[in-house]
Length: 210
Length: 253
Image 1 (tube, rainbow over the protein chains, first blue to last red):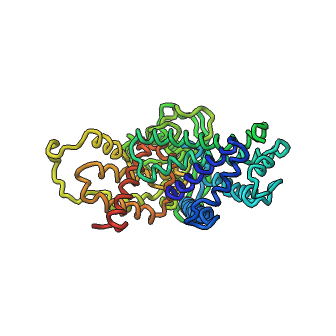
Image 2: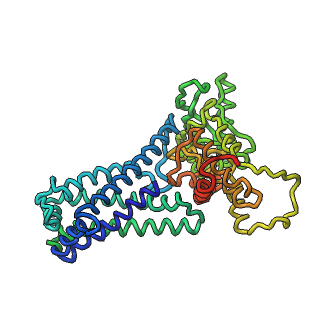
Image 3: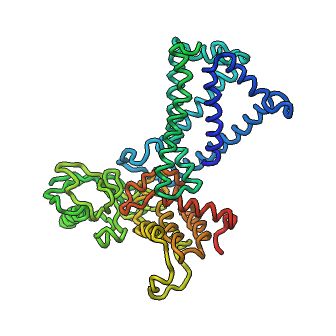
């Protein structure tokens, strides 16, 4: 979980930084998208780097989901008779929403790819003009799209809040002082990433990016 | 105090079991939770009914025998307290209290509120010991131990093996128990020879017993009557990573 999660987190950071290019203007954003396709040339033919990255991400994602499924099935098997009186969460809320939160994020990723990568669910859907796709996507009259994105990104924030802490722990973080640091770091990281992702749709919504 | 109790009754391991409601009158707030159950049992015996079976021994909070899920809380609402040390003043008059046994596949119910915790013994047998002949207590200064290590080892050694961590874990994992036992030995010089075979053996025994996997949810440390900290699991993870790198994941020397 920890290793595959951290690989996916690296992508999330890069993806968020790429998104923020939209504040540098339409041309810069579109150029960034084209640059991604040419990355690695002349070593690699055009588009290869992107497909290599997609392949690696898909492998990490499948391994991540597989590990989560194994854990969920083990948890289910470990308590065949449930409690009649189950107290609410006493540890961390983020920790207890990892599984369903992960499912929500997974569904969102599928929608997101159909929306802004392939363009099937996008009102513009022109792969050569990514900036126009984004602006059309989060237009004020499509507020429900922005709402769904917000919910998904907040779910991602919760997922990262526990996921990052838990990854440190799995990889051997062992002192009480380090635990406080790891928890704070995970919280700051989750909030920063959530904010970084949400600033784009809201900037479009209020007309800052057009 | 007058209370309504909903207690899990199960005649034996094969019985399906059910929640049964009892009324207990005239409970003193100064009674312990187990004394309150004693009062109920006296009354059940007098009226010719089967008393409620529950585990207990020292009633001083140090033996680890008692363990009840009280209103969904392992060992009840008071933190750092075993069920035997919990007093009825923690509850209010007229309250309904749900009492259930620990729920885990590795802890099958023997009768009513009594569960079989042999799975913990199997984990200990898989490495929770040192093989050096110890004899009588050695001179304390002969093997110096850094104070911080001694303190952390002692903190883990406080584990009484009651099973509350498993009962509270959303995954039904016994990792806090296993980690406490691993940490206690791996921090001390006497525990070094078997350090990296111990952790593999104990984690394997834990998984084999049917406990779930740890996801660092942190519910265990909240209910632990001895306050074993969650970071002991990090110590176990660190040893486990080192052990798999060294021994290729094989238990035994």
